Length: 209
Image (cartoon, rainbow, N blue to C red; front, side):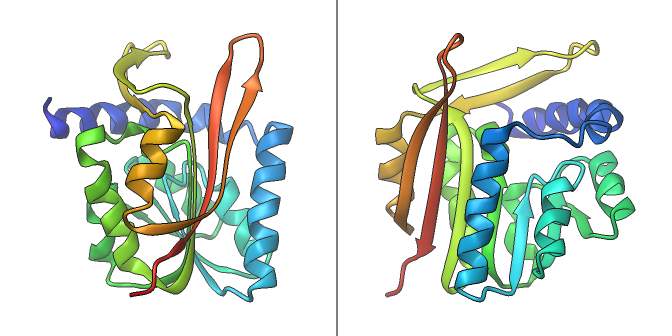
């Protein structure tokens, strides 16, 4: 598996999708509920700073900023970063393997349907990067589709550019996440009963040693 090739395909796919995704500002109800729930927790704990990984066009980052957090958005796609900056966000083109290169620390990290593009062999490495930039008692929200332990490449848009997916069972995720974070809440939600699509919604806290 050539990781640089996988990254380039992901970047190309999302570059091609930027205009279309930016035109769709309405989120599914279940995603709105999840986002609001995490935001409520951050406000309750008086968290101040947030990093969004895989920010896409920036709608979630803008939501957190509008709720009083100082937000940094990162994405592998330069076209997505343009959309973020159009929303007056501080945003950087960056892949998840280099998060610590920001030389910043944050109260919380938020990532939804982005870390599923990381191969299983690399997931711990990327999670370690996240751990490095989290402040003590920091919160990390990760949401991603899963349900079974498989890896595959799929093409969904007209360009035919493949996206790599790594899907995880709850058992696998609890094992790898528990090495670095305290799991505060873990839910596996059926978001499409017809397609039997599972979404893992996970809130974590930085471990203290």
